[in-house]
Image 1: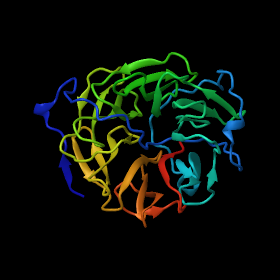
Image 2: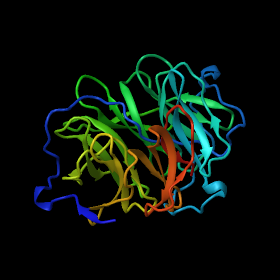
Image 3: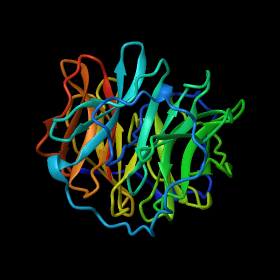
Image 4: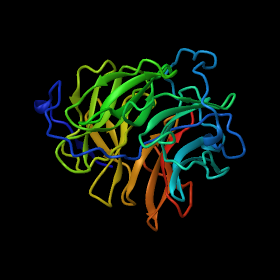
Length: 339
């Protein structure tokens, strides 16, 4: 696929110059579950909120691609079932589908912890606003990480799993970037951008954070990259129309997956962060919310190519060998691979 120049150095600035926010959007982006998934759905509404003690501390993280698992691995995703959005899981070859939550509440943005064993997600199960919840499979423990600090979306773990990045609208004004300990302590504002931020992802190396932020068009965003401490912000994309509200780093930290295009005709793009180019991977289907497999060989995404039915698909990292994973009349979206 041809590569497009998406950034002009003469317009680069340490802090982006943008206009007023278009408004807060809850958009689809990804989450994940662990290796100890039970064979029956987990009704998290019946679980007691656990104390904030966690299992053995996580080992030092080394950002190396992991080998492909049996069935090409597993994918967790948001699944609309009836009046509510739930969490579901399936093998990447389409086998062993499970619905993991059954709540009278909305659950979005599932993401696995880097070493597996737990999943963090956004839910309004304790009221009207969205908080972060951490479900630990060992012992079936549920930890509420935030408590009415705003409306939270798009969580992403630091590579060592000790901190969680998320977007939060804490008061009137744009949604900003925050971090919190995996125990639910020390919630801190990291970056208050001039406009609303709709998605964020921590790089696998841990040194950078990428995020999508509104600039000057409704329902379209630009991608920005900054240091993990919230400094040295730079705008990465310009001129790629209709960028959507999700992104994902490649396992080697060199590329970003995004989706872009006119309404109703979105495609998946692979952004080379250093070269500042974007290669189009799909051609038609109205695609969104893409995520790399742990080995970097596959990409999961949701698409409307099946008769306008939102399903999960996978493809090779070069855009070839597209395979359908789910086929449910109700929407499946926001896929994220298990580590």
